[in-house]
Length: 70
Image (cartoon, rainbow, N blue to C red):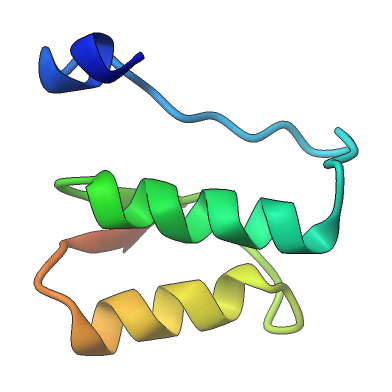
């Protein structure tokens, strides 16, 4: 997987309704993927979503471009 990422050919996708092993492992995956990304795109999410914290942190404290898709 690292070689694929290094070549710029890796896309992380999360499917709604898919159950993760745990909330904690999903958070680790989200933050880890965001830390590796050159740019982060979010699908629209509710303010109560755990993605809200990730988006806020990246948008305000990171040089990584962050966008919410419309």
